[in-house]
Length: 308
Image (cartoon, helix red, strand yellow):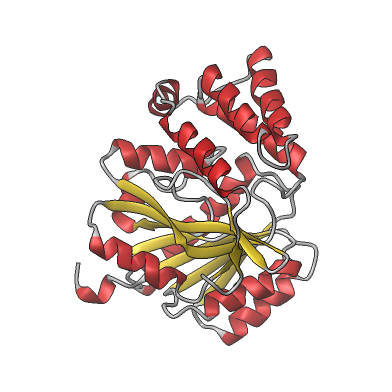
């Protein structure tokens, strides 16, 4: 790999009816100290002002492109990953035709605003450690002028604001049309010897709570179902439900429990990939216990906006 490729990346963003957030998100991408070679925004049949915003963006930035899919109901299980995959496939083919070279590929949701050197900081981490395969910043939420970190395991990159090394992305099969495709990608990368990392001091501000696109209750029921679908064992699922129950909003634990154990009672279909099922079947307690510890340690802590 020549030095000219070390800071070149592609970016994919799925967007459905994101008129409220897309302008601010796009400003944060356009304002990056290290801009992408290509940014593909996939309009998932938006019925609001999203298409107009995209036309304005493309008119002003030659490296921004968009594709539009037919209108369909919002779905954060299979359809979300389908929309993202359309963007990845289009970007890879576009780069092949236009001879655009790159070394990294990223995914950013249309409700996530980035600090101005977000990608520069993360790509610098790749250069320090050749074994890194996937990284992300930490997800923060803004409330009363303060930013609070959503605590998750630091060795697991977030779904939005994540970057793959191109070699890792291709070796692990790219982006799957499956529920929780980021988790599947993480597992395949780990099993192939790649390191993963979440850098919580690299700030991305999510404008709505994770899994909240259709409301938190519905989102956490789907999270429970996804845990069942991927093959997480029932003891770990119960501990996850307890974990969600001790942090606000507390009802998410009940929703997660209902999603997982309701699916188990109905004996619903599980993922066919034996590698993924085996990984979750044998999953240990370490990650969950670290999340409990992080939650209690940070319950009353916040970061003042502008201190990132």
